[in-house]
Image 1: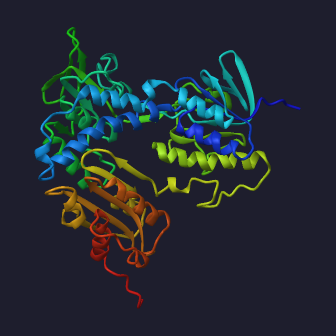
Image 2: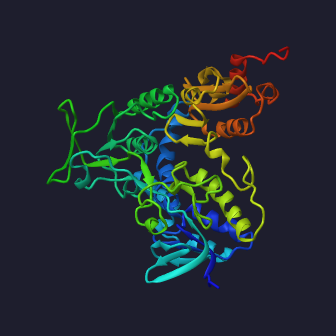
Image 3: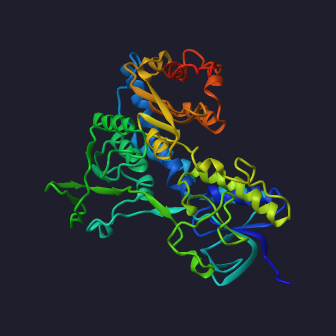
Length: 471
């Protein structure tokens, strides 16, 4: 009879790994979690939390400057030292004592060190090999660095260095026009950097087309030099510490620092996947319970499986996986039907996300283009948020846009996008409409409070029209 050290070992103690462990533990599973860096992971120390702390002060000042009466009171500039100190408080100064204390209080054993598979149901940490009935990989993702000549040796910033920065460069070149690139461009511009953004596509090109246009215009308004459809030819770190970036048209840009924000890939390069027949460096394929295909003991949860690279979606996967693991270990039925208790069905076409630029971008589900590619018969409606009374209260000359994508056959919303100041808080209502497949006819009875930005829901429904019940 094989002796197991634990029922479940989770490799990676970020928010995803913590939730897998916690939800399994609550079902009576004996759990250990392995972490080579800080308990709490990327989101707590180098991504979600510090980046939003860097952004918030600039957002608040711009919001005040958009209101008569308030703008006259805003006479100074951001106190950089105070802002960076506040940012550091959100990371507990890169100390994980609070997160470790939570693990202790929950009864989850922490194993410090780099964990890697060395065979089925075996995880090596340092010199010791632990055995577990189930193993869950939750190691997140790592930055993708594009093959630009000289970039790899230029010692530039990644998102970690940018969010943990202890100074503000006078000039900053950002390579990448996605979420991290646009957010950090706003953050450093508000702190006084002269920022240049270089993107090979339009900004935020996975969103509805108008989104990138609004964000590009807003960046330009902050003095950011936005260059679209451009791939740098060469990057050089000069002897004086500055960086040079050569563009295809011969332009040679210079800055004190360069930030590479060109996306991320699953962190699977050194997990020992080859010892269990999987491919190192690739996303780990899983079913909707996060069980790795071809196994009955291995799970991959969060960004490591490549399904959705978002913290909140990884935590959603983790809640399902933790309870699915417990059910299988205890011989109980697994509820793996769509929208069941042990599956992450929403990963497929119902993912909400926010880009904390200014204007904010909030979206859920499918864009019109992706819906049509998927063969869904859709009709889309849009509305100018500047015409909504509640929005006008948030800013003089409010600008923004909202869009619904409706499945004409089922008469349900399959996608929604909002861009504008303070639209992030609109998103959960759209998420409920999409996930709950609330019929358009019923949405007419969800009355938005007046005067709020949510009134845009009524205007979008009016643009769509009432369903014809006579058919």
